[in-house]
Length: 289
Image (cartoon, rainbow, N blue to C red):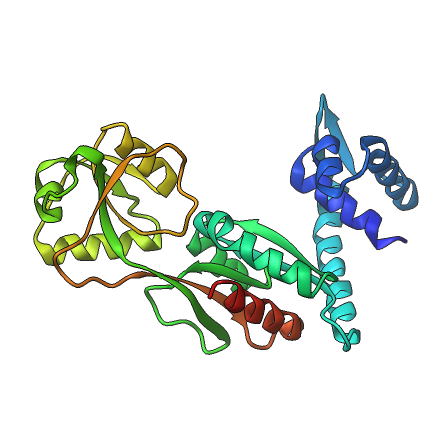
């Protein structure tokens, strides 16, 4: 059995369609469909149920999905363990949205140049979700916001970027006091459920400010656009560019000292892919200097 056929099947299930899997794998839809039919013939059972352009795994397909993921993970670990001269293999790296746009392009460019045989699959998500995925082995490592609770001793952690908090407001508010703006203007809150939002809440509490909240969002780009449109002000970290184009915002410094939002890399120290993870971290640090 060709493990690439199993990989194709897993990608089809994750993408929900033959066309999407073809796009992700740089294959034709006909090639993807042929691989699925070959697997179905080999196992003697339908693996996908088709409804228009979308597909879902059958009961047999769901069983195969979990087994295939485990097998593919073991095969990747085997390749990594046997490849000693160069960094070669595959890593699944989680990343929060601002890391995907702000940090990952630089990191991936550096790795592609120095270690072209090291393949990186990016898994998007919020910090809490990615933290869990690192611990249960769904991803090999993740770039996320520093947890507000102690990390297990089995984990490694390295800070990649510190982002101070700041008030963003429409451009005509430039020069105003940050606390006055927060206390008097309509407020767009950086979501309660995201880890970075806890830093915001801690600062507002320490400053004794209770803003007039109108919206709650967890996406920083969306907050910036709404502020630019005059829908309110916000207290957010100074995240890595690029920011949305065409914005004219006032960035107001805070009067009180504040803890920055820290983006860092989390991994399991005993991972079977620790050598590749060390290469990734080394190149991540080098690319962000």
